[in-house]
Length: 316
Image (cartoon, rainbow, N blue to C red; front, side, top):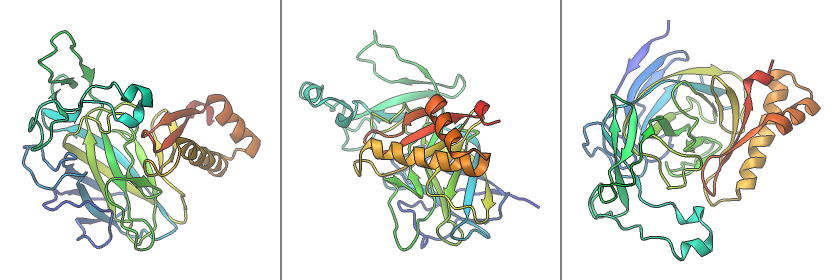
């Protein structure tokens, strides 16, 4: 019988590693209720519980998971649990034309406003009752911005094969710091298993983030997270996939600046045609044509990953 594990970590990690103490061992089908810190290491009370750099909650050891399998992580709840967050105040220069960069405004705003010794961060108010977010920018009363919150997880991943222990900064075939705004409540994330037990980690909650994460971050905040895991024996994956009510999505997941966005597009497209043939019984030509007619590409991270969405309505 499936169980629910309610657990809050006391120690957080910055690597997807198999040598960290296991936070919980779960059976496939079990539900986990937990919390994540913001990217700077603060919890829902604002207490500093870890150093900055996307501290991770985990690892969760999945009983029965072996190399060559895959797991599906269904995010049943992603709930904002505090009334503030923060972003950079300026777009990352990599998102701008070089000639524009020469005239861009300074990233210096106010020292120590959000983080000690940082002057480039903009605080945001999170209205939990109205589910809206707004930048706290009193110097410009004429520029009032307010958006509906759309919580997402920036980090979700497992330990890759061998002794490779990536930090919580990049993404790759193991998942990691994917920063894809479709990884939200109700989504299911599929990940390859490369180690016995998989060693699943989650973290880096955002209240809202645009396509590509062009600021270099979303609205960084802490989160209440509820998920369950399904194990697929012998179902090998080459990288992350995501499913929502409306789409199946292949993610060409790679570290930023490691290659061109076109490489991420190729990875996502290749995985999608494989997926359509294997799970939906499509002949090769039909899979290629379907992608060519209704496929939708997302920039996941500037100078990093791409994703390919196919609407479910065309899958029969």
